[in-house]
Amino acid sequence: MNLGRAKSIGFEAELGYAYGRQLDVMFSFSRFNSVFKQGDASVTGQRLSQYENKQLPNEPFFTMNGNVQYRLSNLIQKQAVLSLFYNFGYVAPFRTVWPESEWFTTPTQFAQDLGASYRFPNRKLVLSLDAKNILNAEIYDNFGVQKPGRAFYVKLNYTINKI
Image 1 (cartoon, rainbow, N blue to C red):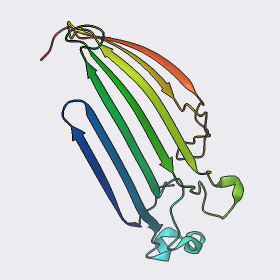
Image 2: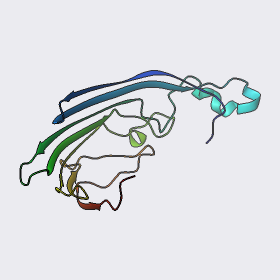
Image 3: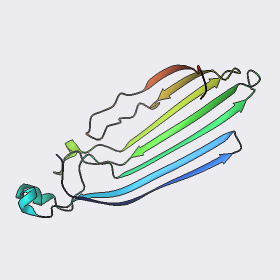
Image 4: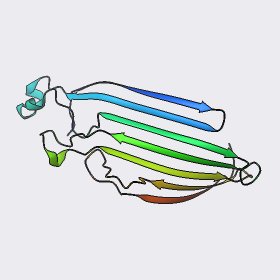
């Protein structure tokens, strides 16, 4: 449903730290109170008046994300770079419908990913290995549909021309 009026008040912040060209650490969080504002009842209808000042459904209101990446140069070959990373994401429980119900509230979500990439000395070829949701946590989208569990990916990138 498209709502004509809503009010969102909140904040988001991001903190980053870099140590040379080896270590990058990033942490971000956001907290928003997005509520329905009916305004003129003749426009929105009386059936929506009960949701005045209620948190909008399908809108996570508190999230946190963080990642750490560590780069090792010349470890296996000269001028090659091995990068290791760890990501985490947290989403607080939120409703997917307005009426209060256990059935339509996503649980606390905490996903964690690990990975590595190796950039070959010619700087044109990168091989990446990723493990997503390594603890196989229950993760949901904004409409309460469960996302796939643990997954492993291998990716090969080849750069034809640098612009």
